Length: 272
Ligand SMILES: [Zn+2]
Image (cartoon, rainbow, N blue to C red; front, side, top):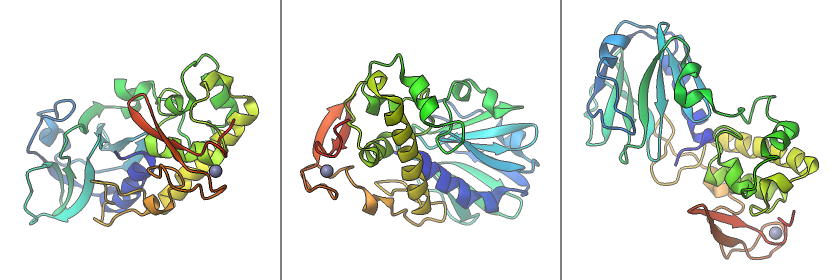
């Protein structure tokens, strides 16, 4: 599932392709994504010029002046750049066609993605309004994480994956950041001290930044907008490494289930 680094990598790849370009039209081949794709998108987008491409959590926001196209990659979505002559396949549900003939295409086999329109400010959309701080912004630090977890009895790993606590951190990077910080994924969020939270907020930022530099992680469907794979998966320290030796201490990495998701951690290095 694409997490923040994969979405940010997509954003950086598409920014030079999209910004400043005029949109010829949009092609909706299948409206049945997680929410229906608006029928009037082709009319709303035709003739608009893309002003900016930004990201909030795992949402991409394509500012078209009068409003914004909001895209979420869901479980299996990818956005990539093709030329207008490239024939669509069964899972190519949406195209943004530029005046130049270049096409930004959404492929989403599992159809948990979203393509929505918000008039005016996209951050006012109901799906975006309640999202917590961006982990790479100055607003997210140990103090913010400490404040956000005081009443949370849930395990810290599950709290990190809750977008109200911090935006865009999913299963892979929650596992990796907790290892980097030396904090057990099982500790109740509200039991973390301020010092733990300082360490963890820093570890989240460092983990995400390293993953973005590597172009994200390519597991299953995700590829960069130029069709190339990301390669952060080769740097995973604990994720999907159950039974392997910890790179730091040599103990066996343990795999457990938390909230129907796989958790991986080193029982020696992650004692807090
Ligand atoms: Zn270890």
